[in-house]
Length: 238
Image (tube, rainbow, N blue to C red; front, side, top):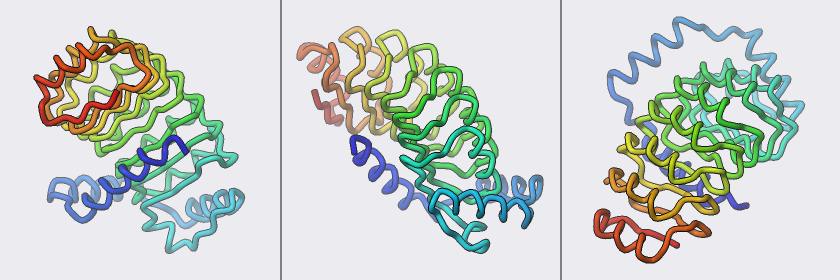
């Protein structure tokens, strides 16, 4: 349940963004669909796989499915290949599954994804490279994964990110420099990391930040005060 707040916030962001696509977005979506048409055979395979996980959908429902929660199911890397036909999918939560880096390559075709939950999976730095094509991502939950500073460089292309959880990962001050380019970031969770005052300097560039969670970090009260001066509108919780 540690990810409940993050997931609900992500769904809220998703709900307010639905239906607000620009002409450019629509063009991208159309070109994506025409270049990789979804076959009925593919959908039937997806339908069968999801049914094995206790998730039953009609073929028509799968064609327009936007949200899929597979948290704490038996999903593993091989199973993710069956999600490729879900071109309309905007929210996918794989919390607590056996998914590893190898499985994330199967998510690359899901260009409509806006919310992705990978909390408490076996994902490491190497897996994050597969997220680069997901340019529509607004929320990414990496809580409790094996991600370190080295992996954060792969998040730099995700310019639309508004919510990012790195809670209980191995991230330190060094890795935060890679977040400076995420100008749309509104909520950042760093609870349980090795971040200290030195790392807060890199956060000063995130002028859109509204909430910053620093519980169980090495950040001092002095560091919080300094950051608050630069980001006066940001709620900093420590």
